[in-house]
Length: 465
Image 1: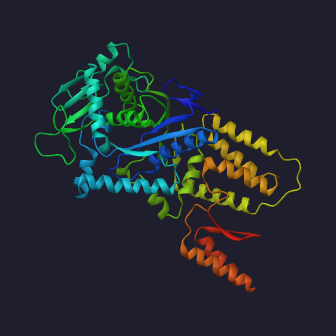
Image 2: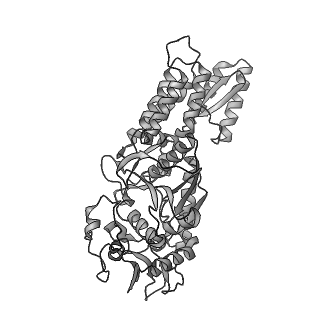
Image 3: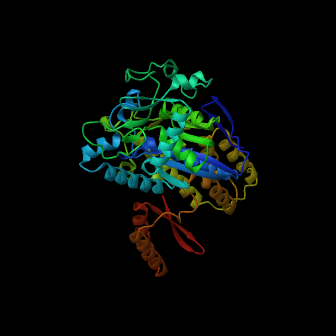
């Protein structure tokens, strides 16, 4: 049974999974710029939760959103209903249309998603494809009496919500959210905590992304999209909702409030999971600091997406993890050593090793203990170094790797460049001709290209390092 920390109850507890399929939603990226390694940590966390659920035999219905409209710059200052739209800002910055910006960064994100071998959701739900659903949801909330209109839009009334016996902001760790004094906000708002459900387009100028609505031309607020998408694709209530810890302060409390106000059903989400921030060189990561590294930066420096996954495995998801190039180098070398040790494993006569079942139990226990992946990784190392027969050892590691996804045993899913495949063919031909010294030189070229060779009775195969 998988036990995870629930941000709502503030304790580690078993997931409430009484039905056949687990309904799971993960907050995806706002596609106005490249996704950073800090963002990827959250998406890899989601992947590990899904794979762990599958490891324990559960079916998972998984949706991830892509925010391509409505996320305003005021979110950085504590008021997500103020500021400029990030897509429109990026359009000005890059001299493109907001639609082209969203399309470009969405494709980049999906490419990284594939490179990290993350399990695809049933659907990547784009906010701009659910405008009607968002409008309909705002209309329902309005009918229930939880909205009011001011100059710049339609807002959710948190005081009215609380007057009905509901608690606002219980998910947040910020006491100020409950006091209603986060920052100086729009003076027209009844309460500083109130947030926009629908924003009006400015009277001067024209937005690139805007739609007609019962209240006037405009665009949806940032928070409403997730509730609308969840209800459209998964229903009024879900089992698991995953996101970064930065969303815990306002975005997710707002999701809860507007959803439960609309449906009258609680809880909107049974289990909230939040991943901790990634620091860089012991400090904050930021584009202005020049250290908001991307997957492209990782690859250009000679590392692979799997090296990054290994690095993430070294820290618990609820604790900050410090990224340095030295730490990533260490992860790369550890992963390489792990693969080399496994490839060269030979049958042992040691009879004093643990049984395979004992290792399986230990691995499963690590997963169920609030996704203790550093401990699961340690168990994987134990198996590799154990005296288990080679075939048994590789079978166990292959099973563990359905969760870890480091390609420890089977690299067949990884694309092999044509030039590397040709080098392997040349090496095999040289060995057949007895030219072993020349063949060894070719082997070194293959290793420099990021692959190692496993020679078996059935032939040679390449393993991505």
